[in-house]
Length: 140
Image (cartoon, rainbow, N blue to C red; front, side):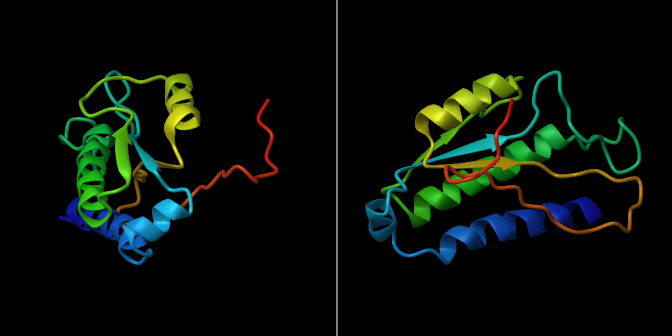
């Protein structure tokens, strides 16, 4: 039950970002033409494993894929002029370099979806990490 609440919370936060934006045509005029959604992990990389153990059936890679596909559908419905692309739509492993290449080649907005794990079942919260074109961060 707790995992469903967390997934619904994450999805609600992401969808609310797009629902509160101006219309698609106004947003497209500002340069948002393509959104690339990156469901984290995948294939041989399961990400966070289950609430209690790796055999519980809950793997981050599966949850973020489902959330990402639903988010993309909601974006397309609300903003038909915005193109939605995914780094993956099935359970395959994509390297960080390939994800970055897709972001740098196609994305006006890149959304990487993850859900953190914690052994403390009472832990809660969200995190958002943003690196935009005007960022002063330099990766080596």
